[in-house]
Image 1 (cartoon, helix red, strand yellow):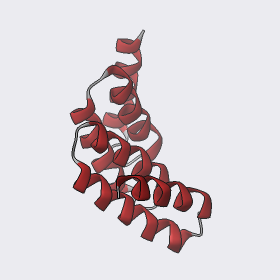
Image 2 (cartoon, helix red, strand yellow):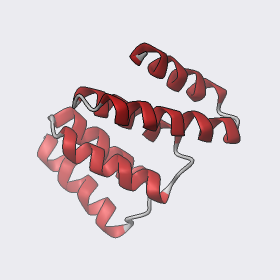
Image 3 (tube, helix red, strand yellow):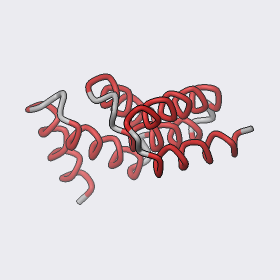
Image 4 (cartoon, helix red, strand yellow):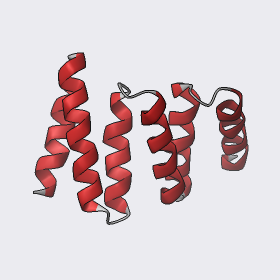
Length: 104
């Protein structure tokens, strides 16, 4: 079943490379299947095309943490905090700040 989801999501990304829905879905599915490096690539592409997509910063940061890339995770959380400050997304901003605080 996961393979079919991956194929469907990859097809969505091919059809609309800048689309946030397919790109985010693909990134999350890659996390779920254990392809963390692939997921990071998708979160990176997501945020390049959709810099205000707040969840990408949070879940991208978490994925970087799982890979042991703590400084990269901190940097992504900080970027997300700045973006959510500008967009007024205080809930996600609080989550990002909490994640950053946990890393020290």
